[in-house]
Image (cartoon, rainbow, N blue to C red; front, side):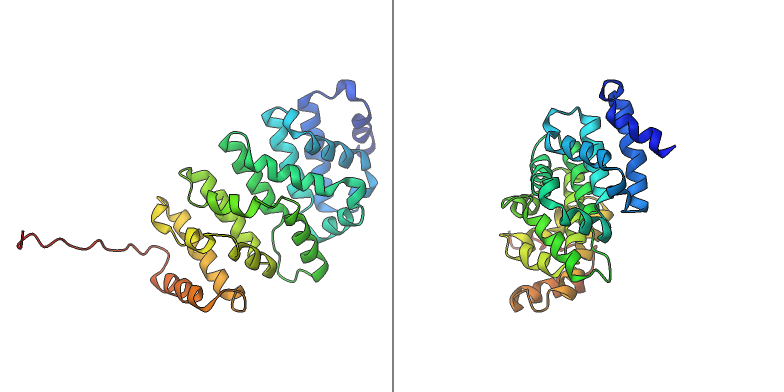
Length: 253
């Protein structure tokens, strides 16, 4: 079954968008289960990456699927190492740059999905080896210099889904020590994380609290003492703390 389906990638004339999305999902599942399939079915990977290089020419459904598929396919340590070994051939730097541009442009719902795909791609797993961490760091840098500032700004934007996706991404990233340092050096990062009053959902408040707790655990040697005090106060107050507004004394008016 696999080889006949693989041959469809070579017959471009029959590849309607629906066919192509189906093929992406089929081979995507294979490569998630076994990263060795990336080398066994090169046409799948070529087609996927070429679509990402030219994502701005795709319709919304295909654009979503190619980034989602790459996020899932590249999430394992084995896949990262395979792609990194052939980084220049696959133009992974261009792929990651496209990820950054896609997250910065287009309708909000597309940006949200792309952020979630990136969170999947760069997800930290306990026991991650140094090589995999270094690859994740390199890929993050390839998103572009303004990326960290953009995500930090998204944390307080008036779009709940965009804020939530950005919070989820930050929560995944700060499993890496390098990400704690990178984000903490970004202007307004800690202030924006601790702005829980902007959240209207329990999920948003809980995610901010989880980020603060992880920053405390992973940032002891990175975060300045004065900022660590603020983080620990936030943790002590809890996820759903509401600051009381001062009462106005009407009797003396």
